Length: 402
Image (tube, rainbow, N blue to C red):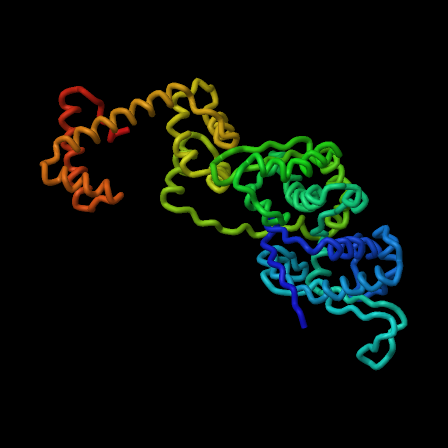
């Protein structure tokens, strides 16, 4: 037997089903009478009705495809890491389970040797508990089907889940790394941003033109990867308003607790930068998000460069500058160029002061493209000697204190 296994980590990782497979899954949820009531563990289904809801003809070929898709959903294993809510236990579970416990088609034999007179579907207990707890994200199947671009269709599914998590937050945008988005779509990532834009922008534009997103922006935070920001559109907001949350309000418990976040460890250097951002009045949550989503070197440079800005609210300016990869202040760039010039002077002077023996070793090492560690130690000693001498004479400031 072939078993499919998908890994789902909280709401942050969203793994795609195959296209036809997905259509079956979405429409099957529509067949459940109402999520406002507790669901039974089994129920009859009509494959012809499924075909009609999917707006495909109910020919024999499609009938067989739907049956195979239902069987594949049953064989699909899901590894949840704090992503599914168990109502009875009142906690987000970490477990491997299936969405369906069983699918029995008309004419097949049941456990008690009775022949099934209709198609029967047995929902898995954990999946059923999640539905009953109203931990759901609605999908407008008609809108999904209307999208012409496959990229737009997948983005609609992916972004919809993330947008849903913004409903109680101030921020009205989400951000994805290009490489991460390529894994989720899935598409082959490009090395150049111009090609990446050609790849994704048709889908981005379709979602914008149809109102699901209000706008999107690319940010070149590094040469190897880029960030894409998406803002909520009117259609996405309307979808969230249509969710019936009365079932939760009327229960004795509170709203569902948030899913457990992955505890992401930071290096000592990253923690140091986060602490510096916090001291500059950036909130800890924002500082950690900046560290997760942006290049570390970029953040380090902006912590220094912000001192050359005339902004009244330096914390807000700093956050926006890092997120949108703004140009550094000219005075900061000028000082960096001056530091590089001084460093080059010191390097040349250190090499000139080497004894002939070491100069010969240096030239041989350059020809081979590698210098010995001992030579590097000698050069560093000369460098420190020159810096101390030049600081004493007033030729340079103490660059090591900067």
